[in-house]
Amino acid sequence: MKLLRVGTAGAERPALLDQDGTTLRDLSGLVTDIDGALLADDAALDRIRAAAASGELPVLDGPGPRVGPPLARIGKIVCIGLNYHDHAAETGAEIPAEPIIFFKAPDTVVGPDDTVLVPRGSVKTDWEVELAVVIGRTARYLDSVEEGLAHVAGYAISNDVSEREFQIERGGTWDKGKNCETFNPLGPWLVTADEVPDPQALSLRLRVNGELKQDGTTAEQIFGVGEVVRYVSQFMTLYPGDVINTGTPAGVALGKPEPKPYLRAGDVVELEIEGLGRQRQEFKDA
Image (cartoon, rainbow, N blue to C red; front, side):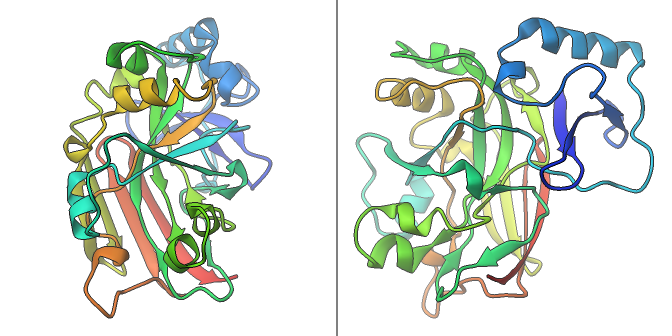
C-alpha cells in the first residue's frame, strides 16, 4: 500500500493512493491518522487492505491537495552517516567500521513539496536524497539482519538537507548542521514493506534546477537496511513510528570541486526513489 496524508500543514487527513497510481482514497472513515499506532496494528492495516480491494473507499475529490509528510507523530529520526561506498569516496572519508549515528528532530519534517528554508548565515546548504525506513514493531537487541527487516513497516523518500559549515566547521557534533527548520522533507508516500521486496535494489536520483546531481543505488550501501535496524537496536529502543534515514549516495555539493554548488534561495531540488515517488522543493531564505 501507498499511504499518505493530505491537507494543510497540521490538519492533514489520511489517504491511500489507489492501484491506478493517480486516484486518492479517503481513509479518515477507517483510521484517524497514519502514525506508529496504526503501523503496529496489523488488524487495522488489514482493514485498509480489504477496503481498498473492495473499492469502497471514497475518492478525495477537488483540486490536488497539498501532500504532507506521510507519517504523523514521529518519535525520533535516527540518521546514518557515510553509508554509501561512493559517497565516502567522494568526500575522502574512510569507510566506517560501524554505522555512524546522528539525529534529526522530528520538527524538521515537512511535506515532500513544501518550501525549504536556507538558514540565516548559511553558505553551505546541501542536498541528500535518502531512503527512509519507518519502524513498525518495537525493536530491542535484534539478533539478525532478517529480524531487522521484519521490524520495518515501510519506506519513504527523505531529503536529509544539511548545512555543511554548521555541521563540520562550527565545532561539536553534526547536529547543528542537520536540524535547521524544514531540513527533512519526507514522502510523498509511506510504501508498505510488502511492496519493496529488496530495499538494496532501489535507484535514487536528485536534480538541482534540472541538472542531475545524484544517480545512485541502495546496492552501494555499506550497511544495508536490515543491518542498520539490527545495529541501532543495540543502542536504543526503536518504536513504531520511528524513522531511520539510511544515508546518501555520491553527488552531494560537499563532494564537488571548488567552487562547490551549494544551494541558494530560488534553487529547485527534485528527487525520486524507485517505487517511492518524487519530491520537489523550492528553496527560500529563512
